[in-house]
Length: 372
Image (cartoon, rainbow, N blue to C red; front, top):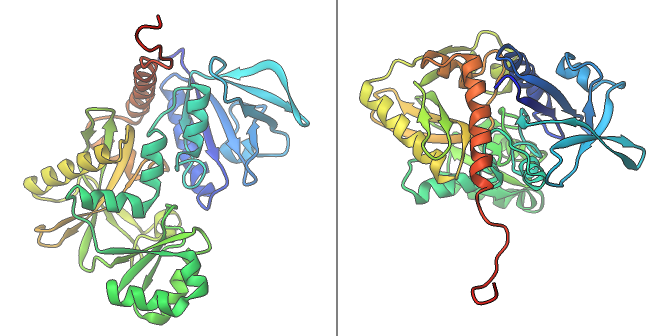
């Protein structure tokens, strides 16, 4: 694998831009330790693709003013970045990559948009495809699918942003009747707890709905899992995924919001989590079912709520591009399960190449019988 050139894409037009930079630094450093040739590719908040002149630049530096504007063409057979020169691009290929590792969280990176470009360009990439990424990003759609498959989830309702803006009293009334209090309000298509709030009454609910509406046109409201533990597992694989030992989140704040995740160093994790063997097995089984239900591949982190008596296990959500920061659970849980960080990222690259090779076995033309 040492000869493989990996393009790590990070940043982007998303509320999770800064988190993406943290994940990218970890991924780039770990891939280099594993012997890969790494090409850092930054996308700024305006959506411009930038290539740092120094390949050892930190993610923040890769988005600096002296970085070179580049683009990836949606044309099979190139798998390369090209220089941008004003409104046109050089015809000479600039930096070819063998596989892309998306380190982007949120919109335009985790929702299938980037994956669609990479599919058009016929470039192998780590993680879920277009469908798995889109479904995994939309919390409302994934929960409907889980419920259809008999996977236990919290009670939820989706409120359109237009309803919050045009009929705020009706939106509050709907949630109050269908979900009640306390409840959690979050944008459907965002992660890292951006725009997430807990509401204890109708006043707080309206404020939470309006904040979530700043980030998405769809808002998910869920019944609060009062008294439940927050448990997570990591999933790795394609058609036959494996699941790590579980870990437990012990937030420093009332719930695991953005501050508790990335800013408050008092938040703790316990890996592996102290759970009965049969509960661990149930969580691992449900995680695998979630992974397969949304047609995921490569990697995912599945979050759960487990009651204190361990009798009830509920799925919270699946994340198709889990965090890779210094405190992120996805690599931590695999390390506790016997897979080191370099081994984990090497396996993810291998899975990307494997899936790309399998995908290219399919025919892309068709001649009806009798016309050969």
